[in-house]
Amino acid sequence: MQLTRQTEYAVLTLIELAQKRGELIKTGDIAEKYGIPIQFLKKTVNKLELAGLIETQRGCRGGLRLVKPMEKTTLYDIYKAIEGPIYINPCLKPDYQCVRQLECKLRQFFGDIQAYIVEKMDSVTIKDILD
Image 1: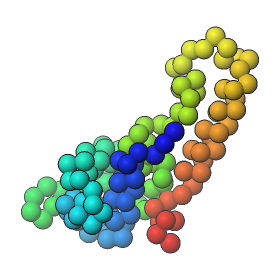
Image 2: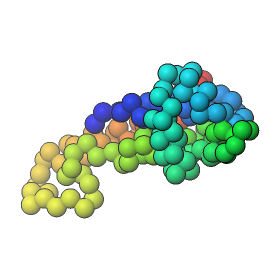
Image 3: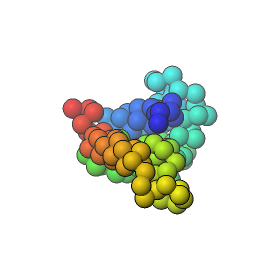
């Protein structure tokens, strides 16, 4: 598992929106501030909007703003919006079929690691990062 650049940009975007506390912020302003290619940021913003983390408003007075409060938006929420759920090994996916699943020691080990990662990411909010 590796965090992608898109996930990093999503976190930066949400931090920026949280700092503005409900004010509409233009995508171009965020892209310029953090050196993010605008087209790539637009794709990232689309995923964040589909996940219900932000809302967009079109037009010359439009922009982006948080929908979910920064106290309740976790790093795992952001990760899932961009990457989907974390599976550190294919055998941990719910629909994965493995003939060794019942006796496999590695599956339990990987499952414990995955649960730890999810728990840690789900315990850190945007507000925590800003404090």
